[in-house]
Image 1 (tube, one colour):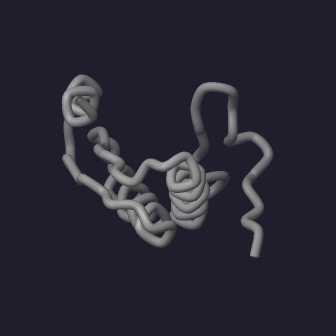
Image 2 (cartoon, helix red, strand yellow):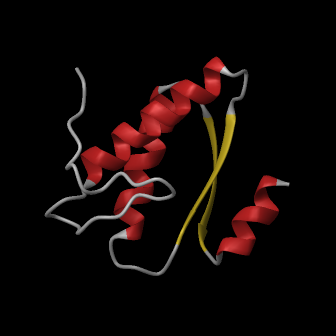
Length: 91
């Protein structure tokens, strides 16, 4: 079944929305599943995932990880942290 995203959340360089209105766990799960599928098709497998201090971040992270693992990816969860931590985890 194909997921229907709110038309305003997917942008050229990021994903933005209002939690509970235009963006939710189902969206994060679908994004994880789609990204994971593309990664696996390209021969990749491992993804590092972190999040920022927003109240909604843990919920979105959990759903994203569900989507990634459902597509066969291995996920390294680095938890709450700054963007440079995620860059370091990738290296």
